[in-house]
Length: 357
Image (tube, rainbow, N blue to C red; front, side, top):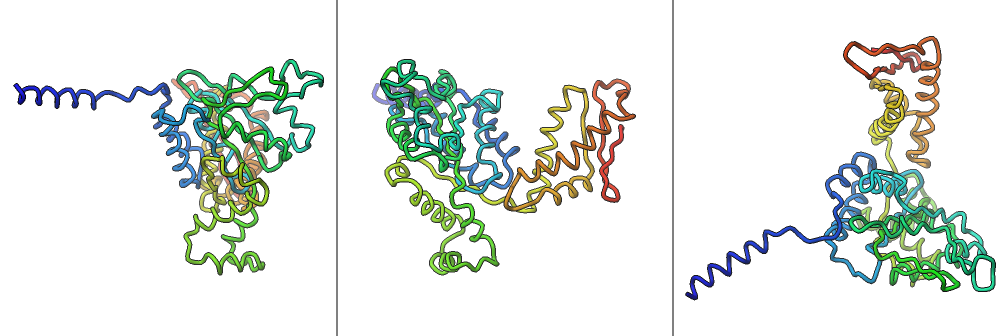
């Protein structure tokens, strides 16, 4: 009987171990990863950290009295910090704008703190508890986390930044009048900052001979590049923010500069976005390798990242394409059996031209 009981016990244990994890979240991690790796180029380490965070959220094993996670993205401009949040929103909700975005550069003055925390008692609007926060996007749904982005955190006034300490600590923000409370306990809180961008450039620039760059090399030569970058970012953060605020942030990820070797892949990402816009006209654009290389070379500037490439694509690809579509070739006939008109961009003698094929 004891032997049979043991067999039954092992069978029950096996059946229990085969059960799926009962998590309240239902977003597809594989889909999120695929979207991130397709849209964010040259940031494999940062993407890996984000995916590890999302695994904890998906498993639903976090502290229920805190936000699901608070993540600070640091690094240069135009490298994908904001786009990472947009991509996560698109993968989870099917809408790249399905998150609460607060541009902290609009809260650079002390009196702007009321826009985030509400007007104090006795002031106009105090009873309504009105703020710039979108409660629906912050709280998310039963199966999906809310998404919040505090963009360019370092540009906000100290009063605004300190108002976030309770949000990071217990996931609750009560407006100044006490009339209304926002819960961030079902939220993924993202922040972005450009702090340390110049120092990170000196870290990678062999011709940087400033005293700070030389001292950084001498004191941290034995450390891997990622650790030296993290040290730079932490020092810059502690120079700008109080330690008690930095200590409440769960994860601090550093984004890299985008190298010239990544530009062709970024051109393909921007081309895909352009084709999504052309789809409403039943058009599809393909480019030759020469066009890809030309636009990549025109768009590369280490200081501006992907934003410089977007300007180059607009000038050297979208402008001439619009002229082609509105010119003598404005009447197009799709090939037999196809509802989509395919256009190819070619490059010759410094000029991008188009033809239907």
